[in-house]
Length: 354
Image 1 (cartoon, helix red, strand yellow):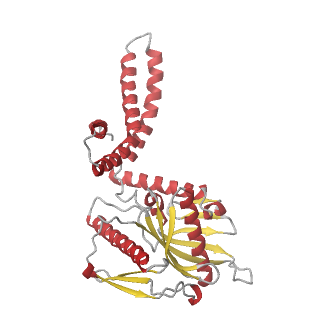
Image 2 (image 1 turned 120 degrees about the vertical axis):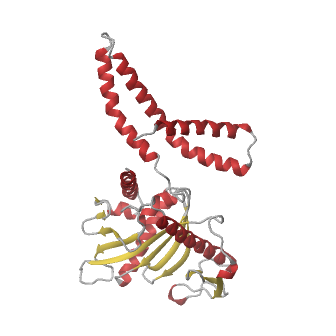
Image 3 (image 1 turned 135 degrees about the vertical axis):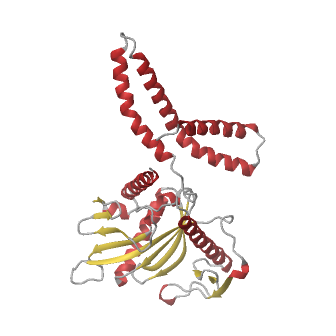
């Protein structure tokens, strides 16, 4: 059900923001805040205008039916407008759903090889390359924070940041267990194996989101090393941070300086604490009902990549796309999968509100 007064309030708020922004009496920080709010509202305004134009047209058509000369035209217009209105209302309801405060944030992603030995590590590498290509295609930046590479181009674990506005909104549904079914490079007999890797997606926390007390952490410095025990450099530049209250441990050794590694490790720790804080807040709120699509459960088996059949299946929404190569290349197929997940999440949250 659309509450028309709420829509009118949004239109009024848009006019107020425009006046404030054009007044010249707004500080830089306030202007940034107003710009962000207006950007969000401006996405909804065309739908609101379309809704009011349609309801006004329906009222006019009903009135026109009383005129014998205009009745046939009015009946036709009324049928068209009544047919269009439910779809407009549905789009509006989805647009008005509460947004995740972290949707505009950058993300920290962690990929860990699971069962399957070297093949699992190779698949973890495939997933990293998939997300890296996808991010670059969207104009986002990718920075590796920590990696534990294998000799065959795989990863036992890789932690990286995707830096870009709206990255979390697109990537958050990737959290979970990803499975691959294929003949491994290491398989001489040509048998198909099933391996898995886990993906965790964490919104990057801003400094204002989480405050870390120095007495709550211990910072250890050690010598960085790469795959096969080769030293990245000969100085003690790697950083390990332990957060005592939660037991969270973060390491970073990919940068060449201790200062850079510490900054990266602190960013990851801050984001993990932010994620924990968000989970606790959602758990305490009766209104924050997790949907099947957006549960973010890292232990949930969410997707299977089947090489023999060239298909990718997302088990949460039972969607199968025969575009395996394109999806693993971070192409339009991955966008199609993510768009379907976002739509399913919106519909499920809408149903929960009814």
